[in-house]
Length: 94
View (cartoon, rainbow, N blue to C red):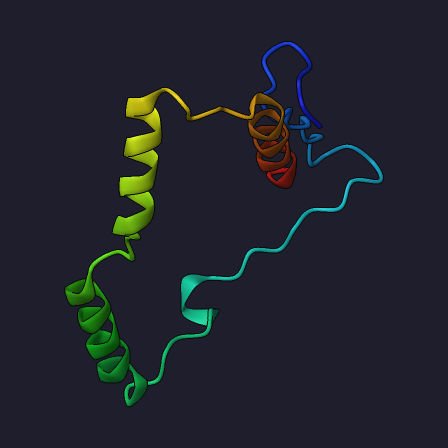
C-alpha cells in the first residue's frame, strides 16, 4: 500500500505478542541458516573478483546518443512512464 500524499510505502503496525489470535514468527539462530560449503567458497570468491575486475556493464554508444540528444534539445522525458515505474517500485516493497 502506498501513502497517496508522499507515495512512500505504508507499513502496517504489528500487533502485540500478547494479543489473542496473533501468531508470532519463529526466528532461527544464524547457525541454522544454510551456508556455502567450504569447497564452493573459493570458487565464489574467484567469481566475485573476476566480476569486480570487469567493472559494471556500460553502453558507451547509448550514453553518447543520450548526450547528443540532450545537447540538441531533442531528448524528451516521458513523465508518465517514470511515474508508473516509481509507483511500481514502491508497491513491490509491500
